[in-house]
Every structure is written in C-alpha cells, then in structure tokens.
Length: 482
Image (cartoon, rainbow, N blue to C red; front, side):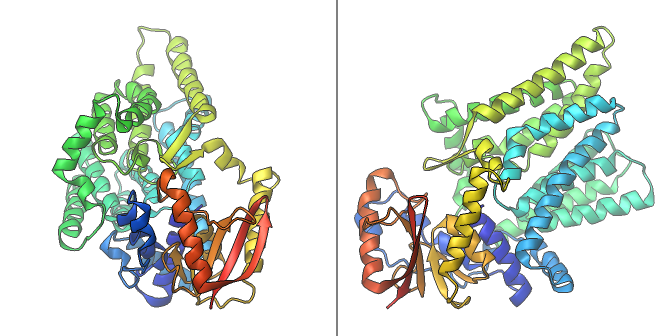
C-alpha cells in the first residue's frame, strides 16, 4: 500500500469528520506534477507549497460513495482504516464467489467451475488488484459481475429492484464507473437480452451522468490525456515498435489474449471485450494502464473479460463435432498454465521508476514471511518516532510512508518535498551517515543526486533531527521544524 491507499482512507475519514472531500494526501501530490522531468535547478528552486490544499477532490473524481461509507462509519464507529480493509476484502472475496455463481448458470461441472475460478485467481490484472493499493474503482469489478448475475437470473420484482439499486451504487463510485457501468448496461440490452427494458434507461442515465460531470464540474490534470489529439498520438505510438507504449501494449495483449480468443465463440461478448479493453490502448497514464496491474486502470475490462470467457467457453463446450474431453480439458488447462506462467515470471511495471513483482506483493500479506516481518517491524519503528507528535501536525513524507501516517491518525499529510520549508515535521528515508534524502517516483535518475543534495540542505536549514531509527540499512528520520 502507498499514497493512493493513504488517500483512500484519508478521504473517507475527511468526509466522515467534516462532510467534504478535501484530502490533503491527494491534493499535495498534484503540486508536483508540473515538475516531473524538469531540470534539477528548477526543481530545487521551487517553493514546494501545496497549491491545492483547500481544493475538494471532487474537482478530479466524484467519489460520492465516500458519503455512503461515512454514514456507515458514523453508525458503527468503525475506524476508517479498518473499514477500508474490510471493504477491500469483501470486494475481493465476492469477485471470486460471483465468478463461480455465474459459471453455475452455464451448468458447468463443479470441477470446471473451480478451475475457472482458479484461472482468474492467477489472472495478473485481477491478482494485481488484490495485492495493490486501495481504490474506489475496484468496487466496479464485483458490482458489474453482480449486475450480470442478476440480469441473467429470474425476472422478478425483487431482482429488478436489486439491479436498479446496484446500478445507482455503481454510478456513485466515480464518474468512470458511471460511464463504463452505463455502457455495460446498454451493451447488455443491445446484445439481445431485452426482457428488462428499464436497463436501457439506467444505462443512459449512467452515461449522461459522466458527461455532465466531465464538462461541468471536473477540473482534472489528466483531462488532456483524453483529448482527441492525444488519443491519435497514442494510436500512432502503438504501431511504432520502438515506442515503450507499443511494447507495453503488446504485453497486455498477450496476457489478455486467451480470454479474448475464447470469447470469440460468443461473438457479441467478444466485441464487448474488445470495446472495454480499447481505453487502455487509446489513453496512456505513463504505462500503468498497460501493465501496472496494482493500479485501478484495469478494473473496467476485467469483469467483461470474465463474462466473455465464460460465455465463449460455454458455447465451445456445446460443440458436439469435437470431443468434449479434447476441447474443454485442453482449453481450461492451457489457459490455467498460461496464467501460472504470467504469475511467476512477469514484472508488472507501474512507471519507469517503480515496478512490482506480484509474487513479492502477495508474500508481504503473510506475517511469517520475511517481507511480512519487515513490514511489521517497520510499522512499529515508525510508530515510535511519532509517540510525542500531535496528530494534527503537518507532516511531509514520501508516498510509501503515508499509509503508516494515516494509520496513526494524522490528518495533515503532505507529499514530500511539498512542505519541505514550512511543515511541522518531515519524515525522510536515507542511507545512514549520508547527507541525502531518498526521493521516490518523481524525478529522472540523472537529476536524482543533485535533487537529493539540495533537499537535504533545505531540510537541514529549517528543521532539526527529532528522532531517527535504522531498519535494515535504511535510516528513517523525523525532522522537527526549528
């Protein structure tokens, strides 16, 4: 977990306490975007003031579902960090339960249903979503699967009411889930399952909701990424084998290919799979939308690939001209082994300076593993640094220490180096006995030494070392403002 997880919990806490969406964790990061790739002289001369400290996060995404969560937290008095973990766990478990239930509608044997679930358990985009950060958009996956399960189930009043409620909940998660959820409902109506005609209206509402928000309220720094000119440029880069976007796009295609190919045997769902995969090729966010599976950019096509695969495999298994043993066993086993291969061998890059190996990400979940023990000792050590610090103090830290700060109850967190001159405290990482500060995921390697030096000098001029602790060769230092 890192900055996005911290922002997720912080935003729920903020809505619960104050009724607004001014998350300082999210806001401070936006102040640094304009500096990415700039010369170190320009970087070091920046004032690092959080220009968006009082901005509502609704300017970027309308996570209205946070208000629903806040009401639950108020009623139950569950800490937001525990509530977030529970929601994430429920979403993960229900995803695989729904895969099994949907497969049951197609009358597969128990063994085949279990194998289908195992295949998707090893599907890197879905596996990455389990081991990655918290995102509201991840709720889209089980909700779409639930909508589809209800849609192909009995056409009774209770079923119809549930579809309406779940659709509205889906639209409340974010503007993107509203668009893609609305598009999914429209697609279900158009591909021939038309008994539930009210779904057409709900789908239209979801799409309209997105465009209303985008053109009347949203003011996102990512808006240029979806402009026509940028999309055309991205398409050209996709067909240039020397461009990184082309290489990453090919890897995403290889990973998704088994599911897309099987969906060919239910051609309507094949088209749906292609359409829902298309945004990950037309839009780029530094490569995370291609193979950064620990992010949320893959949430929208995952349930459609699941549904397309199950429909395609069902049609294929009905083909009596070829031995069922040959078709079904070979296809399921092959797809399963391909996913195993991806699971153990592929590095899933989030950006040029940050990569994740999913196997390592999952190992950290186990307390007795070396990574799990390191995670626990790191949390205990960092907690000791803040024993005497007021939880309302302004603290500036890098992204990977922010979840710990949120867990400790801090409400004014800044993305280091934002606040390097005027926060109450700085929390930094460094190699012991060196006058440098680690700076993660924001500048190019050639600029790094100079920037590390100038940030250390600024910290040393305005702060004094309050406490420090060394964990496995890394020194964590808490600086207190002079």
